[in-house]
Image (spheres, rainbow, N blue to C red):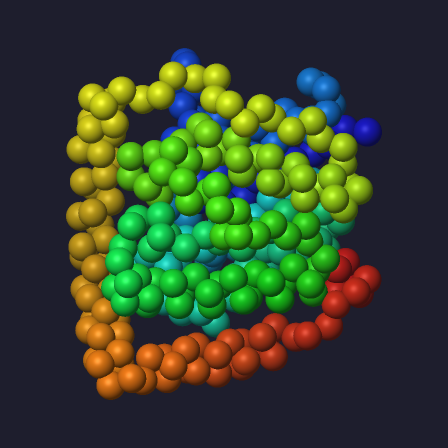
Length: 286
């Protein structure tokens, strides 16, 4: 039977950091597709878009995905949501449920993943990282809930120590290197195998392409990285500075747990709204 794999997500799923010899990107989702079945037995469609947030997946990518009638779909999103000035966890949760629930309701097996901490990947120290980490924890709690509710193949990327190694990431530390993309593909392949949903032959862990030269890396950062910094300096950085000041204020007064309690209270409301049921009815959208 032909496997129809559709990938939804942001620039990581686009494949940025894993260039093809003739131009363009490959990435973990394409590597996973190649591992699932012999050539000709897998139809792979990558709908991911650079910069996409959870709302973008629901509004733009989900309708296209449903039209392709996937048997297998991957949903990897949330990092861009953490790097925006406005962080609406309830809206993110609603969008992610629309995507995952919509795909499951159409009969697809869905791959989801807990996010790694971008603060650790970026090397941000101590309390400066905490507000970003808290955002990731919030999204991961939502993803965990949806994984149970809709019976997804759920991978914990943040729990893979190797993923935080410097060699797994590109020069910007936000997009995996080829080695990092291969690790992600192998983690998803293992998740499918553990559930008995596929018998993939995991892609090799070793890169086949050449490491980008120092000049190529510097050029990429000058063109792409500078644009990202400019965009975020108008949006994310002012808000993030305010969060860091608040974190410092609470830490000096020994009240850091207050911020954690606020997140937990918000999550309680959000998860109750999403519902707590699981099993066949929830999994099929019935």
